[in-house]
Length: 232
Ligand SMILES: Nc1ccn([C@@H]2O[C@H](COP(=O)(O)OP(=O)(O)OP(=O)(O)O)[C@@H](O)[C@H]2O)c(=O)n1
Ligand SMILES: C[C@](O)(CO)[C@H](O)COP(=O)(O)O
Image 1 (cartoon, rainbow, N blue to C red):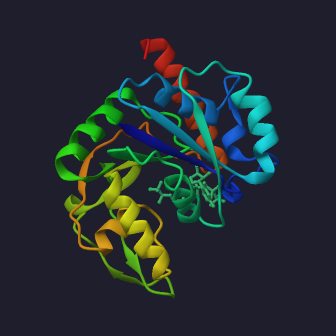
Image 2: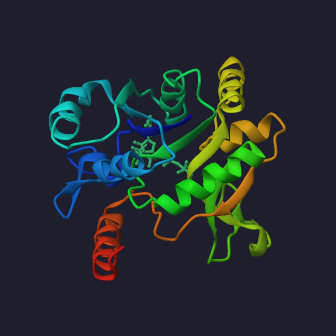
Image 3: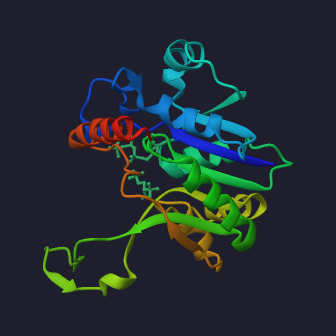
């Protein structure tokens, strides 16, 4: 069986909004609802765990879980201080029969069925897979005084997205070790890489944006408009 942990327990500080960014509406529907719906409709996803802020549980139940008709049972876990804490709390709720677990940002509502299916297929072969896109800009490495210290070859640079997809036992063990060693990364693959596993990158989509700052709301509404026009 395949499970997805959708993390939606952040504070949305960079959005600078009076409500948590997951609950901001794009064309009348909350960002988190779009995200859950894609996994709810995907035939390869058996279990959905949404990680929310404990102080937002009532809001989530009232405005999301009890308002929309989802096909699958949505399990809830509570978030922690960092994204990694939230992911771990979600992983702890995954059914022990799980084979493949997908970890996805609730703030990435434009994930597609195709990317989900491709990532599961690849994870069954490679045990650890992330989706991403080749960077379009030249990337510089700075020192603490904003002085450029290096320019990595662009052909090796990809912007990593989610889902990040793993054999369940592998990611569970990587998270256990990371917490034993108090090791933190900004994505899940970092923990698997640290413990010596090769993580495969596959193509995501430039539309699979993470809604992070106010500009992303406009980008998101444009993506929805284009998809509606193209019947996506
Ligand atoms: N303690 C946290 C931090 C983040 N997330 C989730 O991880 C995803 C990616 O994180 P990010 O975009 O950084 O969200 P925030 O941490 O909320 O944003 P900010 O850094 O601007 O506060 C989001 O869906 C967010 O809800 C989470 O579940 N728990
Ligand atoms: C996991 C992630 O979305 C991959 O790009 C990103 O690292 C999350 O970072 P955030 O600061 O928690 O948004």
